[in-house]
Image (cartoon, rainbow, N blue to C red; front, side):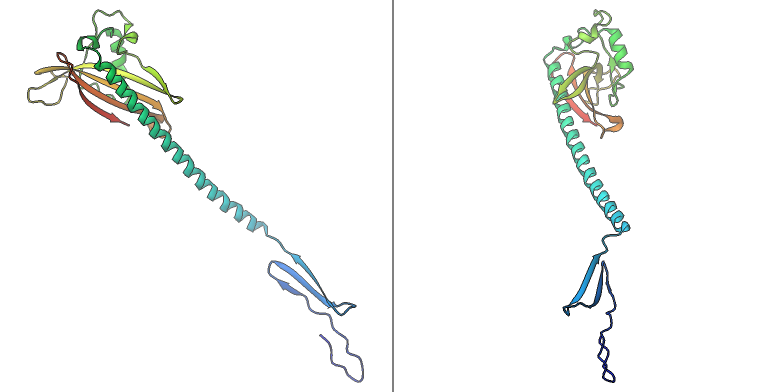
Length: 229
């Protein structure tokens, strides 16, 4: 700012006061030799707190996106595993259907059947039928039977499944009630097929699918029921 002339003296320009702006500092000095105003600007930049907040926001967003994709991938894997398990159970039932009622027991020795029934797969209910076996089979022969007494491992699309056959006898009342272990009007064989595979989305990390059918001890006319978990 120039001071007014007094008593014939020449006015002298006073230095301009510095100006400050948010995010940068601007210093304005007096006029230079050419009569121009010199200006120096310095960017203040982001503070440490702003950087930390930005990193935290990005971390939260990336975490949510990652969790979404991981969950979607797991669901797709579970669906694929379930479809393969259903197909394996159906294949096992078709295998049994090709056998005559008398051939279902062949090779399933009592010792192997006892061991199988002592530790059934979770979800397999054996309370509705009685144990049946081939009295002429040698001990330990059940593993090589047409319907083996031990788990059979099958690989599909790089994943390993274990398939089990449980065979028992049940009786149905004349009124068509449920087939149970209590002796009644009509005798049937009940075949239960269980398929298990490893998957973290299932309880305990193991998924299972269970299917069953009734086979008349006289006529090969099966009835089906299925469940999965």
